[in-house]
Length: 590
Image (cartoon, rainbow, N blue to C red; front, side):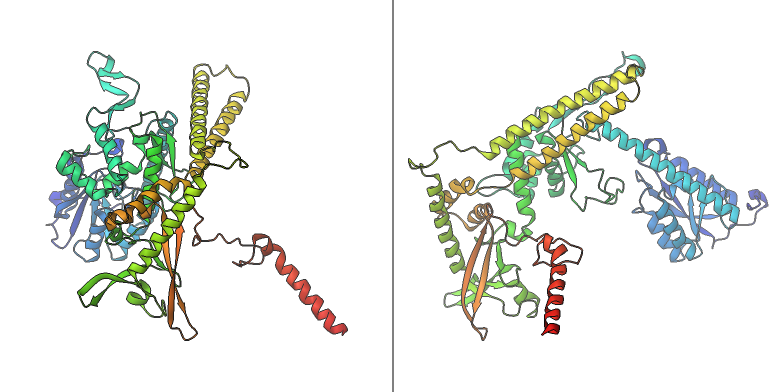
């Protein structure tokens, strides 16, 4: 039952203890962008009509979605919990939120302390059963409208991706964007339609290309912070929003692959919520897809693959080790506990020497129980062993590259990267042909729906979509197969590093070693009493399978055993049981 309305002239003076918080939210959805002035006016009229007192200033969330609650509304709820106000007043209940779970949770939190939520334009008394039902129906319709808008946006994004355009049409650094609708006073309605496209920017395209070149510079690649200083201070160019470049904005744009002709999108089959929840900044399962785009390439495919490999390598290195102080920074590990080895100083006759020893980080900085014995070895000894290993690998590479003897096969070797590149070009060409066929089929069906009899249209369309899915899978598999290196690819790098070992600085040697070595492992050899006898160094190159990679353990009918093969997990327990029964039967007979 609604509260009886009384005109203000028949109401008493306002209760100074009846304080309310006014909340205004302007949505990101174009159709819901109700001006904050209109919302504020309605809330103030509600306060004057009902005799409520509003706290100043009002809480305003501009350009915020109601699908999440990482907004200022949470601060308003906390103020009600601290008894600073009695409740929250909004223009409509949809301004509170459009997420079913979030609405229920935060409304319960508000009402648990006696707080209330009031709408200035929807007079509902939620203290009654009918009023509560009305409010829940309003919330349900708000959630429905939000989901419907989300589905429309997803359909729009899929349509754009099928036409090799980015899901969100906007400007991109290094390109000039020609949108589909442009203002034209001579055209009907003041707008002229054209083909949406991206072309090279006359000034920024070369800057974007140099950003990749600096990130892949030899022998020491530049860091993202160095590139940011170069853009902001030397080149003095800003982002397309007029802001200064930062390491995050540079990494986000360069990782997108737009300059290499790719469109980065999230896999729709992934259920992590990244595509639906704005509060999730990245996919936790890294299920991002790279689809071919129609924009021209600023960098070639080889440079893009090299950049991806470099980013994958540096992400596994601690930030402090990316600017190496020592030759082996960021690649040392203790073989016993499989954790990082750090550098430690020592006091000698000449004074304190930084980085003289290599010690186990777990043993020194965590606990003796984490790594009981630890390790202690001279840095110079391990660096010399790495240098000797490089010499052996350089000789082995020279032997592999030596001319074949008369009795050996002299057929020219096929470069697997070139083969993969040709396969990728063929698959991309076939993919464009199928996309064009799908477009023609859909257009003809839209113009003449009676052209195709029965279900032939759906059957042919599904056939094309199935072929497209197979091609995309082949492109994905091809991309994974290309990243496997071979030792011959590093021959020139090894020989050059050996020749300039004495002249290179530690940071230069570290940058080159990171391209060759996955890790350097030190094993402590001890006697029965635990006394350290020697240290053995083991080097894991990038062209060999990683011996420390986590093993995929199959779970069978009888559980999981790391030392059993997948087949044994299903049959071995039965065989063991049969052997036990046979042994018991033999004992009984004896």
